[in-house]
Image (cartoon, rainbow, N blue to C red; front, top):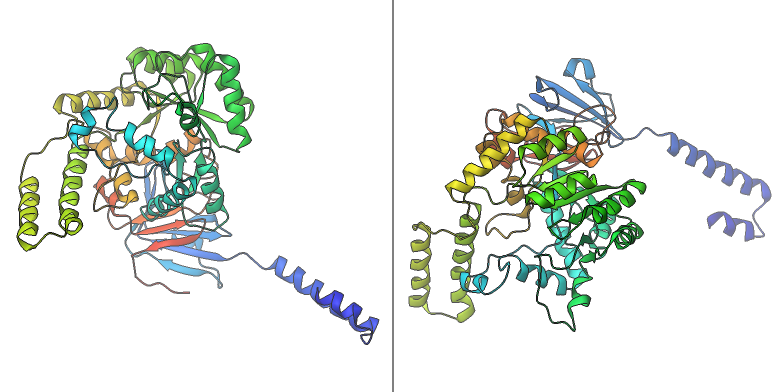
Length: 492
């Protein structure tokens, strides 16, 4: 625009115009040749999950958002123009990967028991319906908050497996990639594929049912409709296809969806819990089986031979729902006096109730009992013994009062260690293994040259104490620091 102004100015001679143009061109070329920003991150320890080795001390040189070199500080060195971040004695790990999450589900508040008992799938369906009827814009904003909280807890990559409306997750992904909002890089699935009669939501008003359900699901009724459902998601530029498999989904239907997805270079994640659905997913050639609680040893052998992934989702393990249930009641009783304008006497009454609940052995009907825990322990051990490739996801969409979304999510993975999985395998499940399952092993999951500069740090040793993962103190994604609670010897 400036150059055009000069040209139009009849008092400006041609020589000066030419000189101005050459100067602008030279400055542009110089800027293009300027080296990308470089950062040197130093730490007391660096864990390589793939090999299980620890480098101590360690340095990571980052250039242009990617890892340039890794090694002892004396070998890597710090270029004169590099920013130095010294994390002291902390342990560096690759950025964490949540391979099964639900960012655009407004955190589900555990319903009161009387209300749960009145509905089929009463613990989940009401929240599913509320999410569907929310404004899509509001859901994306909710998702943006969840994404930021996940990043702050160390998740630099997540695979969002719905529900997220028609294009909520893909739009959130693009906004994060463009730098408009902070969050992990997202692999988005779009609408889930399923057959009618699944247990997410049922018995809706016939006049409204299709309009409601089409916001979240693409229905399969034969092989051709399965292919068309995949194509509709491809139109919205998804990264992965999610299918819910239950007993009425046939192998030809699922195989058609898998084939169409693979033709579009997309992987297929299949929600399958019971033996029949798991077998359907295996026979149809799915890339990963989500949940898979009832899987048999023979099915594990088939998965191993086909190179399929098993994706653990230990959300319900242990006392998680008891804690959520109790904390939700306490939250309700804390807020109720304010809502009702109660006087001091009534406030004290509610405080007394809160203390009674906290001191009680309250048990949610959704809590795993000891027999359930033993079955899940057995599942973990059988999968480790089988040689099946595995990863892990939080399956998170629950409201846990007093915790952020990220804190709640990362807290589910140490439960795999409680179930008998070695700490190193837990870390692999949410780093190197997860990266391979997603098909992004060349980009994320390890601190290696050429990969994205996604790093997290904890103060202690996560192999000795896996709960260190719940206390991430440093988060870097693409070479940019999003959290740093370690204020030691930082310089430019």
